[in-house]
Amino acid sequence: MKISVVVPVYNAEEYVSQAVESALQFEEVYEVILIEDKSPDNALQVCQKLAEQYDRVKLYQHPDKGNHGAGASRNLGIEKSTGDFVAFLDADDYYLPNRFDAERELFAESKVDGVYGALGVHYYSEKAKEQYYPLFGDRLTTVYKKHSPKDVFLGQIHMLGSFGLFSIDTLTVRREPLMKKMKTLFRTNLRLHQDSEFLFRLSYYLDLYPGILDKSIAMRGVHENNRITQVDSKKIKPSSTRVLFWKEINSWAAGEEAMPDNVKRHINRMYRSFQIANAPTVKKWGMILKYLIVDYKSIRSGLYNINFRDDLF
Image (cartoon, rainbow, N blue to C red; front, side, top):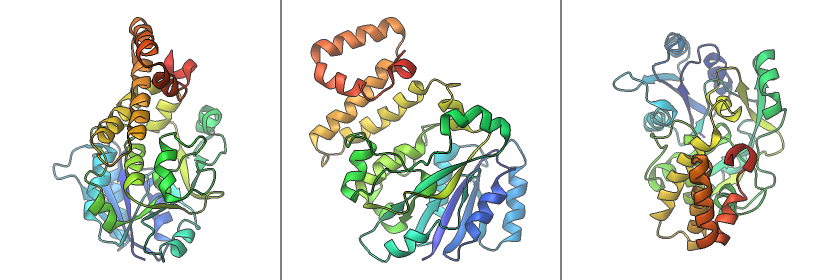
């Protein structure tokens, strides 16, 4: 196995060395590709030192040396990768020693396009733990049981009940089918949730298999400056980011001719539900009334998938 690990780097000078070294512990890691995204801190200088120190570390910036976001940075990393497999790692996260244990066995089968596993949580400071422990606790981000590849997409779009989640940090995918079957890689117009949107589409096109689901294979690093924790802690209203996320999924699904109509309708319900959630109060009630009259079954199904107290009002 030759694995290219893609690491987007932004404002992570304190953490990126640990991330890189956690990937370099594996013989299978052929290269670690750092995409420095015009960080406001000294991350570029740290990345330059890492590239000088380790032969397997390659450093790139965007052609204009500007800031383009995590999605565009991952896309550039995939483009620059030369391994047979691609894995991902955020610059403030890190791999554990068992990261590729399941992959070594599963990728012996050519039918396996990708493998996913469980993500743990690590608090970088007591302040971060105090602030975000109620949100993350010590729980695994994982899929709750082993599903066949055909069910992974349906599970992620909430059509299989309690499916769970898996993180981009725990995904390893064959590069060839990734490039062949995915017309678009990461959406560059989404500031948040690019990884979740990518995983939704990826699981539709590729056969993704469960690896280690009951133990962490990588760790989410939680600190005060995480972008996603600002959303999850309600500093940014989650519905305002999720409506854009579901808009992208809905637009993609509508143009996918082979997708069953019932799946398209379910995705559209989710999108409309978050449209309602993000609307001003007066307009919100008007939209709810409209859909209860003209499409009660559909909108009820969608609304049950969001949190009324936190997301709807």
